[in-house]
Length: 191
Image (tube, rainbow, N blue to C red; front, side, top):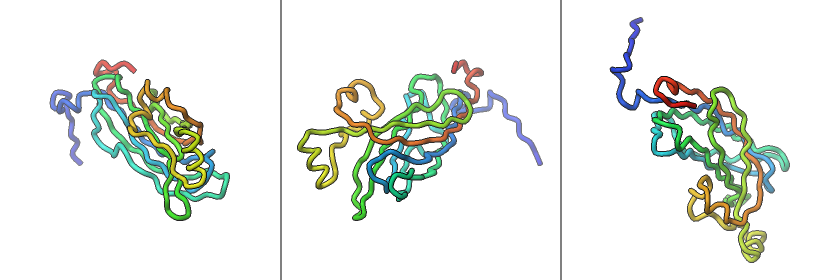
């Protein structure tokens, strides 16, 4: 077998940066009013970050556990980023949905968490919330379903406007993430 040695000078400009590997799974969710749940997810980063491999958004399958039990998804996440700096560190944003017996989907909660910045195995619990709406919307939701949703999903992980919303706490989503940092010190990115 022939081995190949690359010097730093022979690497492309995107390969001469600090690297972050995120490898793990969205385990599941608990504490929601109904079972039969699925999750839509995505990763948001700042402008200094470039995705080298992996898919930065997706959706889990629907799990229908017995009432009160955790909905298990075991949905894989495998991403590889390069970066020039720490600004815009990755955030994982989530939307948990309930599917009823007629196949109709109702938003049950939004949530986000920062991807851990230290290497190793991390177990995270992401709290979720949903917009409360007016008393008319709440009454309609209890009989018809549906309910208020955000016009812009960016409000899930962005600052100021989210705190003006009237919300109610929902369940939690459990994640397991393995974090690998590479070349952070070599290229002057301090973690």
